[in-house]
Structure formats: C-alpha cells, structure tokens
Length: 423
Image (cartoon, rainbow, N blue to C red; front, side, top):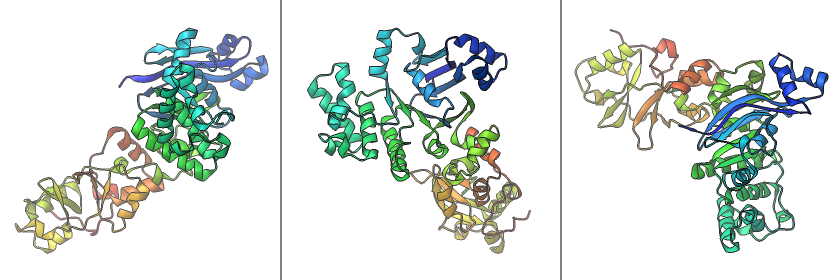
C-alpha cells in the first residue's frame, strides 16, 4: 500500500545557524553538547517514517522529546530545517503559500491539546469556522457542522456557548471542528491529556469507534504509552528529537529496542496489548469422518492431546486422546467421543478476555464471525504471553501470521488430559 504520509530525514534546529548545528550532529556531537557550545536547540533530528492511508500512527515521548515540534512540521506550523514531508507524493516543505493554504484548508486538520474554542461563538459556530474560512455558504456549513457534531454526540448542544460544556465535551467540539472540513489527515497533538482519566479513556474509545467509520489517516501525539497502545496501529517512541523504535503495539511490548523503551513497557498490561491472533496456531482439525485410529495417529504426529472436529465447515467440538484410547482405538464413530461444549474466541479478542476461556485448560477455538474455525489458542501460550515469556515468539507471530504448530512439550499447553497418544 502506498504511503499517505512519507517523512524522510526531517530536522528542526532552533537557532541562527541550523546547518552548522546539523553538521555537528553528523560529526557525533550530542544534543546537549551542541546547545552548550553553540546555543542551538535540536528539536527533531533525522526522523523518517511512513503512514499508510487509514492508519493511526502514534508518536509517543516524554515532555521535550520533540514530538509536538514534529507534528507541527507536517503542516508547516513549524518550518522544517531539512528533510521532506510528502503527502500523496507532494512535498509540503516545498509548497508555496497558496498550496500550503489549500493543504491546511482541505487536506490536513489539527486537533490541539487545549481546545482553542472561541468563547464568544456558539458550539456550532466554532465547528463551522474552518468551513467559513474555506468560503462555504452559511446554510451548507451549518449542515456540515451539525453532521460533525452528531458524529461526536453533541448535536443537541449546537447552539450552546462552549463554557456550558465539560472539558471532555469541549474536546469533542474541537474534534468535530476538525472533522467538519472532511480532511484526509488528522494531526492530533496530545488532544486528551488535559482531561481527567475517566473522560480520557472515554475519548479514546470514541476515537476508535469514529475511526472505524471514518477511516482517516491520523497522526496522534501523546506522552502516555497506554494511550499509544490503545490507539496506535504503529507507534514511534521518541527521545531527544529522534525515533528510538517504530513498530506495532505488540512489537514494542514484546521486543523493546533498548532500555529506554523497556522502562516504559515493563508495567504494561500485556493482556490489553496482545490478541488471540498473536498466539494463534493452525488448528489442524479432524474431519468428522475420520476414524478414531486415524485421529490418534494424527494427534501423535502433531504432539497434541486434543483436536477440533469439523463437519461441512461447522465445528462439532473437541476430541481428546485419552477418551479415544479408553474407547479402544478402533474404527468406530469419532463423533461419539466429541465434547461439544468447547471454548472459543474471536481472533481480535485481547488476551485478558481469552484468559477466561482457558480456565479448563482446553485448546480454545479461534472462530470467525460466521463460526468458522480459523485457528487454535493453547492456554500455555496465553499464560506465557501474559507473563512476558515467549514475547519474541508472540511478536514473530504478529508479524508473520500464525506459527506452525508446536509439540505439547514446546508450547506448554495444558489440555484436559496430560498424556499424549501413544504410537
């Protein structure tokens, strides 16, 4: 997929001789050394990244890391010192005044940390503002503004003053103002950081719901790793003006690039980061017509103590090796040994939800919305991922898809029976 936003080797230096400061950086001087020796401040240094259309790309870093400077360079509220910012292949850094104005009016909208609402205008007038600047007729811009307010659940407050709204509601007005111009790209600079924790989480959830409907390209700035993990399709960790790691939430948590990133991730609730998809394996289901003898042989080959049985694409349930052994290992009816009350989960369920399905120690069927078997999750793999063991394996799975099935000794699965089928 072609990048919607493509940033290459972007720098921002504050001071009268920025190129001199960049040369010192390239010679190995640190940000602090350059500040001390020259008085120049390195805001952003040699940052490159791409954002796909419809993706939420989160830049996470502590105060002073350069993240707000970075996002403001994307629409040139801050002028870059060096580098390229391509939006749909066109370099924003090289745009003239007219093209840049058009970009800000039509393509890119920004949502700020502080709501920046006009106190003397009503809520709907605030939302109309970008459309008014664009020259949209009053009736049309009110219609569009009301539609945007409806998207964020505030249509009933359209004619109220902003100070009649809570902080969370005011931030939703700011979001509606950005949405009203129907931008392709949203730049969001710590938009929820001024809100109390409960309202902040509600806003995060609302943004996720809205994004499912809007499919905007969003670049989101935050200092909160948990927020980054909740929202981001990809996350960049920023320190001292540069990116130290870029990856999916699962990659960041499972394989931190250095001690700096590891310090952020050590207390993360892994159950809210990893999903069934990240630990899912091939189910290797048995057809209902399989004989018990052939089923046992298959389990022996796979090192499994239980397998799912399907008929016409429908899951009948689980069969266990011990039950087949006790039934005589003959050529009887496999369906007679099927346990129909089997645990299941959707592939995008977080592991803290999957955990509840693991209580019996049985393999958990990963199923599609239509009930088709897509894979299997072994309880041992869930416990290992939650404990932080086997993080690299989970990360590999997330990157490349379901892994090949492991033997019971390798995956540590806890099935209903502990004995493996004999040859």
